[in-house]
Amino acid sequence: MALFSSSTQEIPADARKVPAHIAIIMDGNGRWAKKRLMPRVYGHKKGVETLREVIRTCDELGVRFVTVFAFSSENWRRPPDEVTFLMGLFLQALQHEVGKMQRNNIRLKIIGNRTHFAPELVRLIEEAEVSTAGNTGLTLTVAADYGGRWDVLNAMQQLLASGDFDAESITEQDLAPHLAMAYAPEPDLFIRTGGEQRISNFLIWQLAYTELYFTDLAWPDFDRSALLDALDWYQGRERRFGRISEQLPPGQERSAD
Ligand code: IPE
Ligand code: IPE
Ligand code: MG
Figure 1: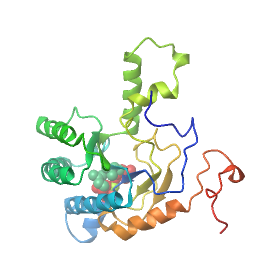
Figure 2 (figure 1 turned 45 degrees about the vertical axis):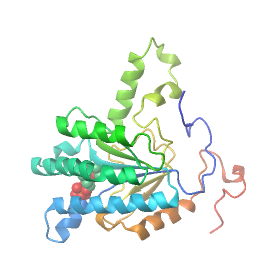
Figure 3 (figure 1 turned 120 degrees about the vertical axis):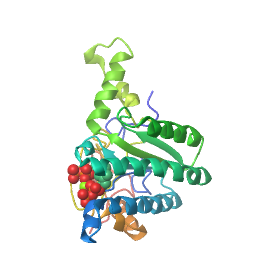
């Protein structure tokens, strides 16, 4: 059985509170650096600092799950030097940050296809997940070599391998436990920095009813106050999940503007 309810099967409660789960596309690093006449990878380095600050603030506010897109299944198409740098940065972050996560009671999860990573990176990922598995605070999920289509296909393959299925009897609830983020509720709020308004193959299944927030700020400039702006915006949304305004429980309608 799935741990969390599905927004298409049941109406989630408390849509107006602090989001339980925020999913972020950390975009705009390269352009941010270029504007400062620096190499693109300088933007990626700065981006790690931004992430640290965002997680600290989310933790403080009571957000339970933060999921960030660090490397998409299509990012392998980038120049080899940049790919190598990003892999190195990921490795370094795992080496330096896991101890701090322990102290801050943060649980780390990595989702995506690990088969193209160097063995050393895979080992660090596994160790980091095991060592933080018992932490009860915020869950940080890093999506690396992740693609929404990969996730759905992978889940479908696992489901089909798990038993004898009559195609017509397959339900959402059969598939959901095989998705990479079965341990988390669906994101309430999606944030994309960097000015683009697209999903870029991020959590295509899980974003079905997520509120989508886009900002022109580049990820390295996405500071605490920018995050608070996004949360403010979120709290002004009316999440109807298919219903009409008049059907919402008192307090969940959007105030007349
Ligand atoms: C996002 O920033 C980080 C990764 C994709 C790894 P970009 O590197 O895409 O920065 P822009 O969009 O080119 O500015
Ligand atoms: C999405 O950003 C992936 C990550 C932030 C890791 P991209 O910069 O790769 O997305 P596109 O190519 O502009 O859609
Ligand atoms: Mg980009």
